[in-house]
Length: 266
Image 1 (tube, rainbow, N blue to C red):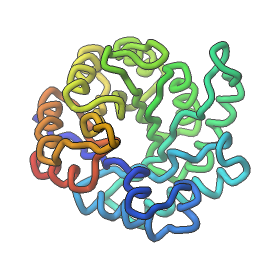
Image 2 (cartoon, helix red, strand yellow):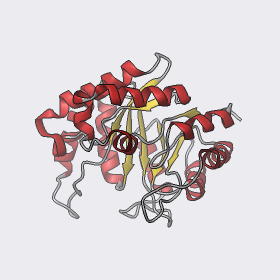
Image 3 (spheres, rainbow, N blue to C red):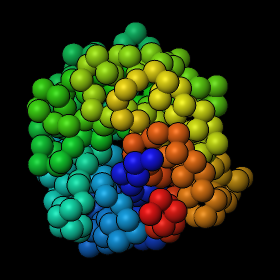
């Protein structure tokens, strides 16, 4: 088995918990030391790709500050990790539903994603993640490919194996491949057990590299994720054996989880 590439783990929740900051976007400029420190910890733990702190940065939420905040996010990640570690421009949903379910015109969404990609063009790849709508993911993907960027795309699935908009892994695999995605899969949403089922469906539906970046199980009533780094790593290692090409963590994971994953996969 070829060892999968190791991604990073949760970023925003870790920064909030350890620093008390609530404005993650502003932290790129106001507290770059904290942002860089977390990236550096993931790189030291074994992450071979880290995602810049740009998940919460887009023209809808940040307006005219979007470009400088994204540039700062990419610069912070680049400055924090060795040259051998790649930096992903983290691209999230815009926070508005596309027509006819919401008020966002798809053409306007395309314009906004083009602005995001242009601002983060210095990253090594576009990491389009936590998408609940395949249609929106395809719009973001088109923006990345138009800019000539390598593009990873991951969607978020419920326990029933569908996104919020009802998209299946099989449908996502077919349409994302046709649109030029370089790697596809899932992130967030569920713990490693359910993620394994979704990963199997992606692996059965595509020849593209598959990404698996699940939460650290489900949180308790207080929002705490209880799966240990060892448990998480063992479950992700099993997914790697299935054929996943990229593995990492989402909500509830830390550099300790990634370090244990790197140890198990070594």
